[in-house]
Image (cartoon, rainbow, N blue to C red; front, side):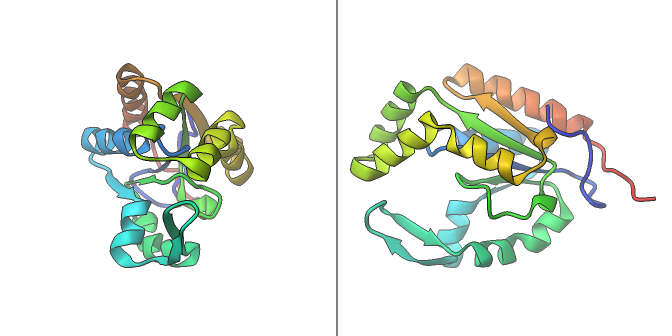
Length: 181
């Protein structure tokens, strides 16, 4: 499991749950928040609620998030600790924010079914399936954060999600902040 401390003075850890859309980030994050009493921050919902975007992308049928505005909005909460950040991107968040970066992965056939049931089609569907095939989010996480805090977890089934939540809950319960000397 990811690193066992850090936090720059925080008393509760911050976790980033990332992965291609449809891998179970929001479900896992919600269940983990319930189990640990950490705050679940769904970045997509935050962007919509607070207008932290630069308009709409017609090709991919989504908001174009303004990463600077998102980071400004989250800064104080992240410094306090005790957060689960749920988003399909990870390379723009400050490295110092997270004690664990969890990359959820799903088999392509299962992911395809999940995304088509959400109405994904055309370039949006193709792009997301290709991201999963080429493990773009895992590589992005490894390039953006210390290797010892990045963990990939399989998320194909309800059983996988339950196991992941149990594993992450145990990690949260055992996490201790690193004390500065």
